[in-house]
Amino acid sequence: MSISRPPMNIGAVERDTGLGKDTLRVWERRYGFPTPARDAHGERLYSAEQVERLRLIKRLIDQGHRPGRLIGAGSEELTLLSAQSATTTAMPTPPGDIAVTTDDTPASAPSTASAAVSPLIDRVLAQVRGHDLPLLRQTLNQAMLRQGLHRFVVETVGPLNVAIGEAWMRGEIEVFEEHLYTEQITTLLRQAMASLPPAASAPRIVLTTVPDELHTLGLLMAQALLALDGASCIPLGTQTPLFDIAMAAKAHQAHIVALSFSASFPTRQVAPLVAQLRDMLPAQTELWIGGGGSERARAVSGVRVLSSLDAALVALDDWRRNAVLESATLAA
Image 1 (spheres, one colour):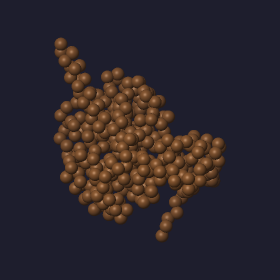
Image 2 (cartoon, rainbow, N blue to C red):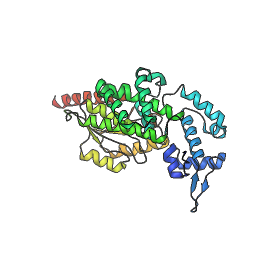
Image 3 (cartoon, rainbow, N blue to C red):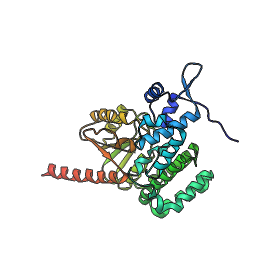
Image 4 (cartoon, one colour):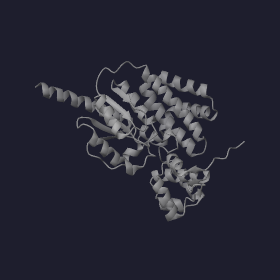
């Protein structure tokens, strides 16, 4: 029995699609789409069909298409553009936590990057679609045990995220199935980090997201690699107010604050938020940002943008090298 999806209010549509409320209202006035209904209180309600079209438009915008052309395009043209883009881009932007997978694989990585783990990908996709949770857990856990945490994060989780996102874009899996996969990866990575020995060396790194950024999988992958390399990671979870991030950095005497911005986070908001936080942090505390949302944002002085997981490890090496040089200078 099929289940009809209920209409969504504008706040839910914003969270689901990554399109801001102001953008939705402007498109409604300028282009005549979307065309929401109104509830008893006059609030906008968007049908499931309109939300699905908005998701597709957002993905295509992220891939470089102009909104004006997309909104006026017919369903067949949008589907064709989506199919063409799927062969040339690394990752769509599904509505769940996989939206942060652009954090986890470089934007230039082709979809064929998953070829090396394609048998595993096929098994995971089948288990996700079959809702076989015990077998999915077993498959992922065995892959991590065989590869070790570093290789599992870099060589397996990244391509898996790409494959899950592409399957969602093609309509092969549902949102709840993507959430099922994400939750298993999240649990597995947290369990693996809990088994690591206590950090033996600096730096201390506070990891979190800003308000309205719900996605943490990319941040969790970075945390796993940083912790594996001996950094002391202090995760705050998601949606931490800027003042509290600064307070946490001070309380933990953090050397670095690391933020993740998924591709679904409004790009125009990244630079102002990051600049505000930069002003709130001590000058000696570094501020790193990563993820698909950070790569397109305006540069901010004193903020390091990490384009990939490898870039996070390079930044960690740079910090340690600079710390040694500073210590030597002070001792001279």
